[in-house]
Length: 149
Image 1: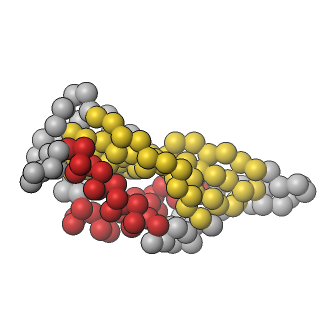
Image 2 (image 1 turned 135 degrees about the horizontal axis):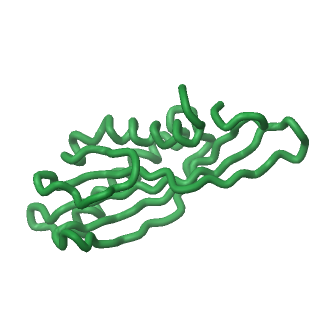
């Protein structure tokens, strides 16, 4: 795999969610930040952000480093079938949480996926959208001399 272990972890979360998304989100799973509102033809869309990563250096030189890499999963949803956009986004976040926690190692790239919290928001550019964000820290390890393995 190319790139840093951090981006590999983000991409593994995207892949895990993309595998189940046709049933959950018609707008798909998109790596990276949302630059504009969800297109009107979609009811649900998910963005997976790679926010930040903190390191805990090993006590002895040459030993592996431990990382906590922050992933933020943004669930945006419109009002649908008697639900408000906020309710629909909340339901989507519930389904995504269950999917990610089914394999907290993200296919073996992480030691654990630690839930940090939930944030609820709205979309200023589209009042029909509700937004729920899930935050996780992916605990993983890299060699002392590399951030890619």
